[in-house]
Structure formats: structure tokens, C-alpha cells
Image (tube, rainbow, N blue to C red; front, side, top):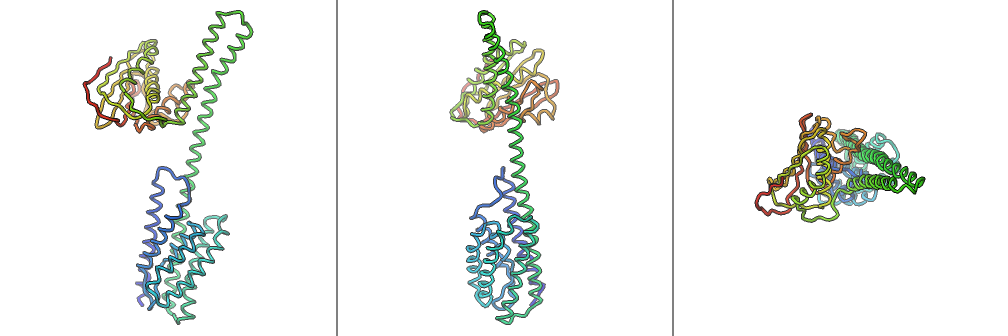
Length: 429
């Protein structure tokens, strides 16, 4: 027979297997999050069966009833990564797809498949604790043993003596197995590293938030404790105690506010989704922050060019608006103007909040919304903007920040419109 044709056919078979493995790996790695290394039972079985079938389709006929291909590789892949319970099922599949071609090779397939299934079933658990390189060597040895059986049995029982074809087949199958499993173990390592990175990221966030919360809550509680001690030492001084009580209450309110911000960050998705009147929420927020703006000599103007609603929680939208507006006011150290504009464009409701404060650098914009990163230095926790990003994302919205140092900052909040009810333009100054 044409041995070059056999080699080319086996290489085509290897290419088919590699393409399928890479496509499967690309699908899993391209997902937003990888939560586990193992793939579910059914996908592994279906992929292995598909590859076994394709391998048989591109197989090379050596003699009447004898076909050489790499179908053992997907059989081994399924048995290793799908679990031992899959081996009997794959063995039946191996025999079933070979059945239509019959011949003496079918008998050999049945015998070798049964022997391989038993060997892999009992030997594989012993490799679970070994280094991945050693596992690859053992998997390669399985393939070599399979190819040796593929020569011995036909030679003994059916007089098959094409040793050149066997050497090509054995070398290609063994080398291909090593390459395929080396690739699979490398991809598996990437999965594990990605899982570890996710765990590390979560632990970093928890650590930063815990440190921040401990600091921010401890300060007002310490103040309250001190005031209560003063009141206890001099209970007869009513005017002084009244003033101390007011300060203590304000400190407790500050601690409550910090805790609420953490809760908003931890649970950004609204408990209830209703049609939120954005115009009303902006007006209400404008009234809330007006005293703070007046104290700093800042004017607040709003121009509302829509009459639309969005889906979400009005309380959380108000929290977003308050945080952004307060940041804008605090960024203007010596007076200025805070401008609010809302309008509809291409099915989105955009809210622009613009100040002419100190502005931010590109690096600061990039880090905006990170845990424990604040432009206020030691006086800030970074929770405000972190909460903004989380809550806006929970309402299927986006945040866009444009800023120039010493020029000011413009923050655009965009949300999908719940419904369209075009009315007259409304202006609120």
C-alpha cells in the first residue's frame, strides 16, 4: 500500500482532532467567567463521539477489513476528562461506529477496545495525584500499548504482516497522543490559573472593603462612645449634653450611610423593578444636594429634555445621582457651577452631570470605581463611585467619564428607556 497516503491520512485525522479541541477550549476561555475546570458529562461524550466518527470517516484502508485512524485519541480524551463512568459508553460507541464496515478488523476493534477500557478504568485513578507531565507520559504509553495490540492480534490471528504500515501508525498515534494531551493539559492549567485569579481578585476586594469598612465605621462609633462618656460624667449640663447628643446622632447617621453604601455595592441589582420617573428623581436629588452646593457657593442648574422612564429602583437611581452630584460639588473647591442635562437618544436616556472642578488625569479616570480608590485621599473610601458603577450596571446602564485636569469633569449615565411617551420638552433651572 501507499505508506505516504497512510501518513497523510493520519495527519488529516490529527488536524481534525486539534481543531475540535481548540474550538471547544476557545469557547470556554472566551466566556466571561470560568467557574470550574471540568466540562459536563454530556458535552464531553458528544464531542468524543463526534471525533470518533470523524476519525473513522478519514481513516485509511490498509487491507480488506483493516482501517488505520486516530479514533483511540478521542476515546482516551473522553475517558480521562469525562470520568471513568464514561468509558463503557465510549467503548460501545467505538464498537458501534465500526460495525457497518465489518471485516476481520471489527473483531480486533472489539477485543482491543474492551482491553483498553478495562486498563484505563483501573489505571487512571492512580494518576490523579501525579504531575501533569507524568500524566501525559502515561496517556502516551496507553496509546503505544493500543498500537502494539493493533499489530499483535492481526498478526497472530489473521496473518497481517505490513510492518511498515504498523510503524507509521504506531509512531503517528503515539506522537499525536503526546501532542494532544500536552495541549489539553496546558489548556487545563490555564483554566486553573484563571480560577485562581478569580479567587484572588475576590479576596483582594473583600480585604480592601473590610479594611475600608472597619476604618469608616470605627471612627464615628469611637466619637459616639466619647460623647456618651462625657454625658455620663456630667448629666446635669443639659445644654452641653443636647449638643453632644446631636453630634452623636450625626455620627451614627454617618456610620449608617457607610453601611448602606456597602449594601448597595454588595447587592447592585434592584429588589423591585418599576418604571422610574427620571425627571422627578433628578428634581428630588437637586433639592437634596442644594444646601451643600449653597454652602460652597456653587450653582446647580438642570435642563431636562425628555419625559421618559427607565426600569429600575428609584431609591438606587437617587443614590447614584446623589453620589455623582456630591462628587462634582466636592471637586469645586472655590465655587462654580454644577450642570445637569438629560435627554433621549437612540432608545437610551442619557443623564449628563458636569462640573468645572479640579478634573482628573487619564490614570485617575481609569481607576475610578475601584475599591478603596478615592480622589479625596485619606478622607475617602472610594465607595461612592464604586457604588455608582455597580448600581448603574444593575439597571443595565453604562457610565462614561470625560475629564480634563483643572477644567472639570463630565459624567454620562445611560439607561435603556422603559417606554416612549414623547411630550413637550421640559426645562428646570
